[in-house]
Image (cartoon, rainbow, N blue to C red; front, top):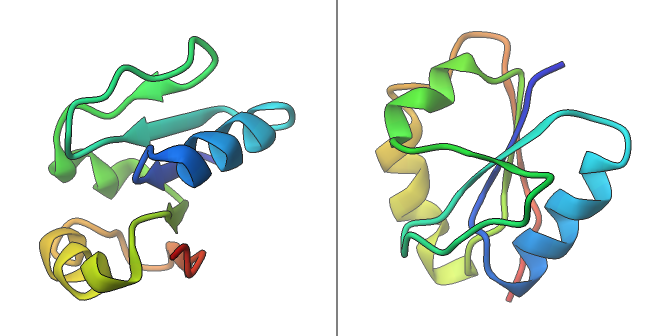
Length: 86
């Protein structure tokens, strides 16, 4: 299962590290933040087409924008979860 975390702020980084204990995890940061060593970097939003599970760890005010940006890349059957980080 290929897993991605969109939003590598404090909560996204915490969540990605936790997931990385059991799964191969990729992370995306709009700000270009450097990711922890156990998290592989997603360079462009179009790469979201490769993932089975996508966790949105962005601010609640950004969820609609993020969904609009990545929805064209999410493959059929992928699970997209919002962590409701505020």
